[in-house]
Image 1 (cartoon, rainbow, N blue to C red):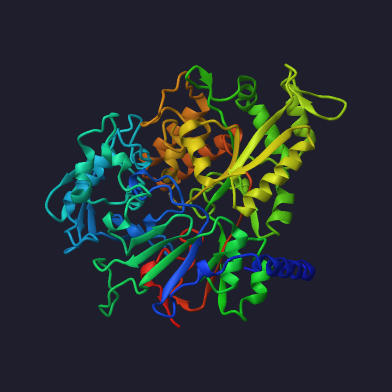
Image 2: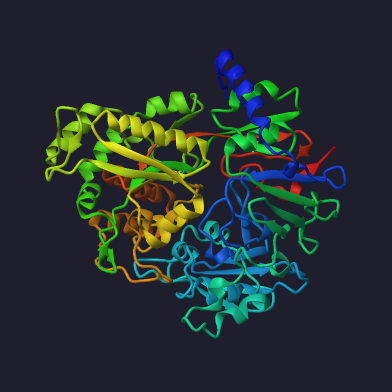
Length: 590
């Protein structure tokens, strides 16, 4: 893929700016013991929220390194491959799937990993309605939302029985982390004085990592708040190469917690990090240094993630107080208002100025790499920048502008709202700043406020006290893995989050619109359909509905790019899996 270079004067300006910034940055905390023991050093933008895989909704998280499922996806071939299970067989009616585990599997504490752990993981944790987990959402089958029956047959065999054929079963089951029965069984009873399961507070970020049991290629060895996470090779991990050598090859991995992308870039350039995400803003600078500083920029094509803004469509109240100011709720829940916002955002400008042309406009909740993606060329509705059309839509619902061009609703309220995003994500902060400018052109005042990622997650999933957010979601080839977003009762139905287990106080007056329910029903139907062409038609309809009603207003996505030092060998980079999907095969060659 051909990639254009920024103007030379801009690259020089960034070099000068970076040099000035380095002088005020403490480099010592990023130094590693690489001379003593080869290790991989990367960075993350935010603190972890939990070390309990069942309770995690966030990405990135530690679990890709520390746990495995029964099967896995090869991000190079897109094929399902064995993981903890060495094989599986499917009945003729497609309703029974029997997995056979590898012989001699062990947890990181040396205890045997058997089919009893699989049975426990599903029946006692993921299928437990008292545990708030998104995994349950993607395993619900049919209109009744039935869950598979999971039965241990022997120490190495476990059977899944589904109420009806479930097309995404293998792809979905591969994303489910298997958890240790011997370490967690006691956390499911008795309940605390507050009536909660001890499990809900088990393996939080305050837990000594040495007390957590893992199954993946790495174990979490240490966590220093606001500094780093340290991973060590799991000596009980099952993989080995064709020569019989134990995998993974890299002994240690460090994740430096760097809550600013500029700082991460500086540390990569100074040698403190082995890899850094390449954004449109830093591409030109890094491209000039690529050969001289012995690293390679990998380009996986369009990212599988989606970036978007969305309004709080929740009409419920809590404790007698509405979650959203009533007159603003009337704006947000009016589809003409959301369409006006969509027409009022200049995506072409965003692509050219913020992304430097290194990206593409996004229109769909399904990743472009998926065979179920429905493109604008095939008929998907899009919203090209048209401020006059945006104003017409607002005028049609009773809004008016004053002599200063400021927009007011029919009741005399100034049209303004607060737009949130996670602080430290430079691209999203730039997108928010442009959205503020774009909507000012049609008379709408946007109060843009970046906040910490954990605070943002709390607002979305717990307090629900927000108006509008810029966010992104990871993607993949299987649409049903996003069912927890599109099923109205799903844990990630963020734009209209309903009652959830663990809510501090009940929601009253929560409503689901007809179009929300229709999208959810289509996701259920798509999971039932085994004919691939019919599945594509079903998911095409879901994409049309999301563009018609705009629960998410999609923006621009960059190319998936990372700069990785040449001493890291075995990288098989992809937009879907990134640099680490085959972490067990990576080596460090000094």
